[in-house]
Image 1: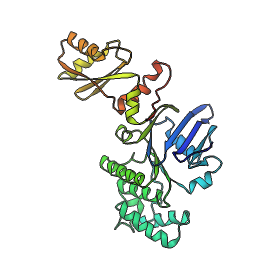
Image 2: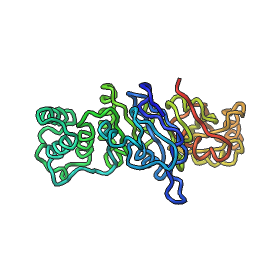
Image 3: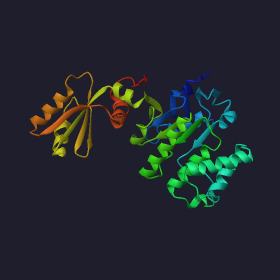
Length: 322
């Protein structure tokens, strides 16, 4: 399979079996060049296995993938020179200093000594590690370790970054700063594939694939995914949200009901006309005063619609970003 400049990654029928377990099942991918493409899914959904196949660490049981124009299986050694890979666990040497870790990575990628020194200084400054060059990596905070790991993954200026749950061990502030760094990298032309189970991170991606038990059940921009799910989302705000939840729980047209603090999000199939009126009528019948509005689906609504609800109807939801 030949790739083109429009897509950094193209995969067709990518499958990985471990004995009787099908961890990834016939996944197709088109990852645009110079964009952030996200994998959203719970633990065990196949995100890490897919990433390992794309970077040549695992051989697919069937299917194929072209990554930066190279066959991910046959050309894995050449591919490793062009990609950066960062896992959720800190994988650098904790007994080495910050600078020693970067120096080692530079030597692995055969970066010339003069260029390597300047590149290390650049990365130390960019990722706010200046002044910690001699500090052992194992004594860094979680956020500092994360920044060092990203610096190491980009030491050789890769065209593609593969990030497997990179923010799972850091606080929200560090997660926000980390994403700012990712956007800066895409502005320089780097393509990024990042897996996450955080909804607020998924919405930051330019494009997104949702995986469920090894199957890709949705693919597109967050906007297009919201436009193409098979349900309408109705939001309810009420003083007595518990009573509202109880009143709506038995309404047959509602296929999903989620409580969010003082709000409820109800999903009804799109073929049902006037979904907001159905919800409002059920609340009035129960004597509950509430505000009822149809709203655009957020990432959590989309995730519920294409995972939990997909078993109740045939087919999957697949959106194409226009």
